[in-house]
Length: 139
View (cartoon, rainbow, N blue to C red):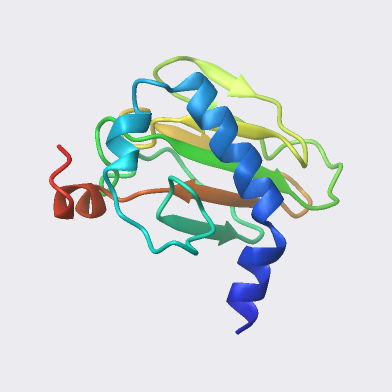
């Protein structure tokens, strides 16, 4: 299947994201490790990967993610246009991002958004919904 080829071809990227997650969020690793994935699960500690193609988002919270959860966001593509920056409203942060940048954030707690841009902005998100954690008894 094409999706499996994509996931397998990007294992080095998933490994980097997981290593950085383990390094910067060591207190969360035991919670994530309680979720039991099949042995060949390519995303490591994360249950889901979402590809956003040419997607801009207004201010929002991801209400299906756990209160302790972390989302990894990787911007990709070849656009060098200005804009498409990542904002965290309550923290008054606007991160100027470029293809290849990786951001970690709490998508439920932190209201976030992407600024408009004239070109194409793509991103890849890795996360785990709250329902997955609840299934494994992680609160």
